Amino acid sequence: MKLTSKILLLLALALFLVLPLGGALAQDVMDPATFGLDASKPYDGTELKFLICCSTAPQFASAAVKGAAEFTEMTGISVSWGDLPFGSFQEQLYLEATNPNTEFDIVAFVDAWGTNIYDFLHPLNDFVADAGIDWDDYGPAYQQASTGNSDTIYGLPFRGHPLMLHYRADVLEAVGMEPPATWQDVTAISQAIVDSGMDIAPIAMYYGLNVDQNLFNWYSHLWGAGTDIFDDNWQPIFNNETGVAATEQYLSYVRDGYSPAASVAWNEQEANQELVQGRAAMFVGWWWMASRMTNAELPEVADNAAFAPAPGWAGGDTASYGYLWPVGVLAQSDDRDAALEYLKWLTHPVTERRIVLDAEDPALDTNVAVRLSVLADEEVNEVHNGLQGVASAVLANARTIPLIPEYTEIVPYLAEMINELATDAGADVQEVLDRGAEDVAFVMEAAGYYD
Image (tube, rainbow, N blue to C red):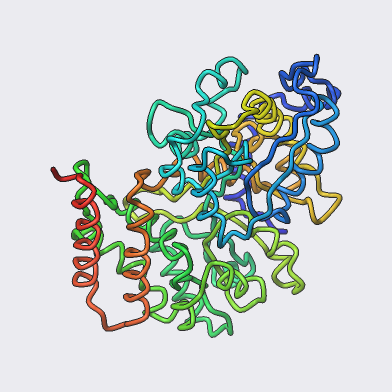
């Protein structure tokens, strides 16, 4: 994989912050003291149940395999990982979290869903302090997502995704362009690719209705331009003058023909496939997809795979969505202390580093890490071609979405609004955003925000 000078600079900055994890890893990983575990095995024979989806995700699979072989040996505690389909995970999470007789002890949850289960999670503040967990080893967006912007820690960061630009270095070099630092640069590069006559789409975007994926890059446009979803009084403001300009820029990639017309219906993975299969030069999405490009079957894709932070706004900010899955303990668990022992091991930097360095088995090969110390680790970056260094740069300015219970009800309105604007090239942006703002205000008023 080729690394541009910009990426090398980002990597050098990240590696400057390297912490001495190597020494910790050199210790016997079967030593309970490494993880702060009780060597007397007070919970020997306890069987924990972990409510989570997607067991084939390499990060999850690796943690489950290593836990069964090592954590159980050190503590006598066994952990059964769930394997729900992602499509039904949210509903099942709410059902189990609110069930006083649930069999589950540990839960992982998407940041936006946490607001609906906070009351059913065991607060972790004392645990974090007693276990000596370095809370500052997590970026601001991940801290916010784990606390709901409150003083209570409801979960520990576990699976996190910064948004990155995935691009073909050879295509940008052919048109004499550096990786885009701003969305306006994306437009300039896209036009240069069109003018060059190359048979490749400049960028693959995704505006389809698929959970809330068509909002991820929209947030970056809004925040970068200097506006937001709400003001300080929870009034929607994404339809203000700045929001209209940001939305018009976001829509321009498909409206101006830089992203294929079919992208109005694409989800994130469908857009990424355009890049991996050599039909697009750029894609902005979660970093876990990087391996798809580096391992692409087409040599012209794999040999020219490159990555940079998601673009910002010309003359404005660079702020993208830092998506997070925290992991917590259900308050009604009968085996809470044993579950907390597991969190010590599962979220420990030694465990996280070992997972991200395990590249021998493709089924366990992952670049996903959340701790800043692991993202800055020299060996980790060497194995993953500097990807974690880029992630560190992204997370320095990443933000999270509004962490209020009503936001899960609001998201469909916003996603449908964006899809309507992308699908209907003649739709008036101001008019559609105004209508969306009315829908959002209705939800907020009904919830009592304006009393």
